[in-house]
Amino acid sequence: MFSTIEESGVSLLQLIGSPPPEEITQAPGPNRQTAYLFTKDTNTGQMALAHFPTHFYRDFSLVFHLKPTSDDAGVLFSITDSNQKIMYVGVKLSAVEDGKRKVIFYYTDPDSDRSQEVAKFEVAHQPLEWSRFSLAVNMDQVSFYEDCDTEPKVVKFERSPNDLELETNSRIFVGQSGADDPDKYQVCPVYH
Figure (cartoon, rainbow, N blue to C red):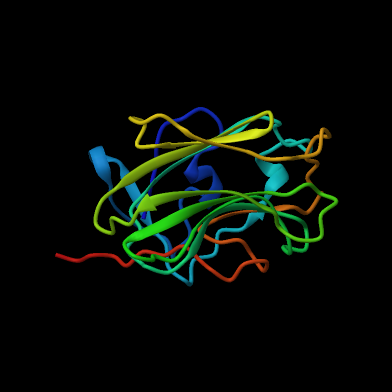
């Protein structure tokens, strides 16, 4: 389940469509917000250039508010090349192991031939609780903020001094990553 959060920039509803596709069900979220249920059948791909400039932002942040109910791995967000073989920017949850999972951040320069995993951050798996975290990329580091009440975890990574240039047919996905990664983010709705 993803929740909408009023932030500046591109919103969840812009990325999934308003109204959302039929396979994305609405549900009550935290603080009287609307949440959206994703399954393995959910498809959210759009053209990246409809939301972002050709020269992607050098510094940016991604904010997530979600309640994963599956123990499986799943991509939360990705911007891919036009063939959907490489994640230029991506965030994925690993499968649960020993009650924990990892938030994996991908940042891939366009001249690479495969997606580059640049950072991992361990989090507790709390399947029935909402969690909020954000990733902020600034210069040569990515900072991970969990629930906004702890000091960030910071990982340095190497990247080209050139801007990340999106291809004309680059795609953006929520809850999946097109053809390059089969792991879809999913939740199982809970009925009372």
